[in-house]
Image (cartoon, rainbow, N blue to C red; front, side, top):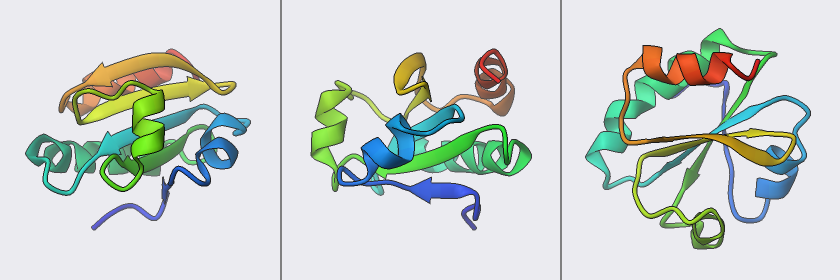
Length: 109
């Protein structure tokens, strides 16, 4: 079951939810048909649960939100982008184990 601490974002609210956020935001670019995306989902959910109040976690479906996917030149998924102050500060491509994702996130908290 998906975490209640993960926000689903769209092309329409990406700016307000991600770019304007006062806290860092980890954005998971994914698609329903993507096997590695499904494998990464529990890692994203666990990080969202463990860093409430310090990190915002969002997911965006690249098929339904092509404008944002194109803007950030998403060519492979899953792709995690870490935004801080509205700017991408880290990028993680592919399904990674939790320690690898957490190491990247902790550098920016």
